[in-house]
Image (tube, rainbow over all chains, first blue to last red; front, top):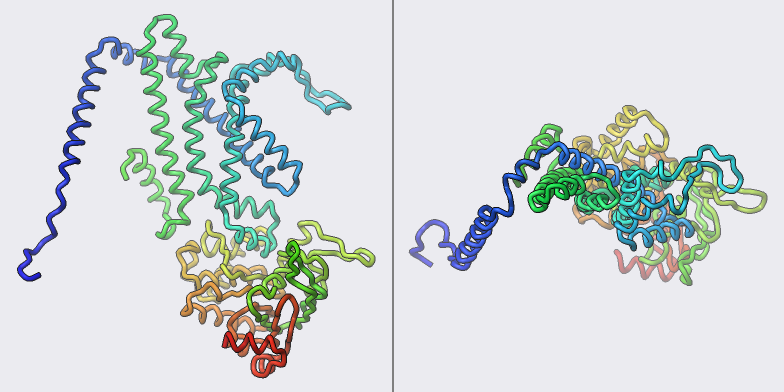
Length: 300
Length: 250
């Protein structure tokens, strides 16, 4: 192999890539042209409503509902996952029944069901069943406001999914970790709290991020039980003005913005819970802050 | 210090332990050898009740492990009492089982804080001293997977010692290690033995047994086939099975 010129080898030519690139560019330009020039999109109307006070109120309610329903879901998920894995067969059966019922029926049906709870129990009583005394009695219609019904419906449904996610996380932790904790005299509760759940996190967080993003969108179901979240607040406008398409674009833009933000947050949390699995040493706080910046702008 | 009487254990229809009696005096080192499947590890795990024996009992320092005596019967202990009993028995595993999500020093100080309610700064101070002892003070802020196997096992020994146990159990502590890392772990164990720790070691390291053990126990098919001082068992075994086993491993 004498007489070789110095330097790196000539890279392989890939003409196919250029063809594909040109094709995609052409299609994108065509689509962009359609969207911009079609007056039916009514872009000025989109601009007008994007930061409208009613729409912003809807955005806020969507965020509130996502956060509260997700909190209920995660709390229930952990509780039911622990029950499902319990040695007590009755508890395990109870958890399985819950998961079957709430995962097996559509969230929309559950929402409407909770909304109409008053038809089933007109009066809700807080007290000791069978024997009394009753501490408090309330009218179901007063207690189950649309927002409460939405939280119950979405939260309980989410709990069933989260229970399975948490369970898979717990099962992913090496049984040797529990043995080691038992051998140093930790109780099962301490072991769960200090050893198993923190390690299960690494497996639980990515699908939970998925669920949060899903929940953000599922909150739009609450529009049918007159919770004026993002979609409902847009509906209120377009049933009046008939500017349906531009308002749906406004809604979509907000959902996209929120899910993008959540995706960035998810990456950040994943890095944080995966830190014991990185090969580098522990990260000082300053780098953590820098990582926040990096992730917000989605650069690798 | 450790007294085991009539330990039986079945998994389904397989009888893994067929009645084990063993006495370990304070400050002595007992090495348990034998082919895999002989029940060595199962017996070791019965000592701190990680496995519940089907019958028989273990006492450590005169106290029953996992049971209390009521009349002429044994009664299982509640979780908290069992945990208190286990806290006095240190254990080192074949696969180290360090807590993967926390740093080396946190691994060593976690149990004293959680179980013995030692104040956190004090626990860290003691953990530091123990890491010094196993030669890993400089690695205190690393995570377990950033250490070599030998280093992880030394941390695991420090973690067990942090509970100030009365006895230490070792379950094949060097079997998962690369050959060049075995020595550093055995060195730590040897120094523990020299300091008078009561130890039960399940091992394949015949050299270690010969050098450090006060007594060698050969297990075969769920029973103790032969036991005695290492000079006797390892050099001139009387039992045919022991001879056969030693000829294969030596």
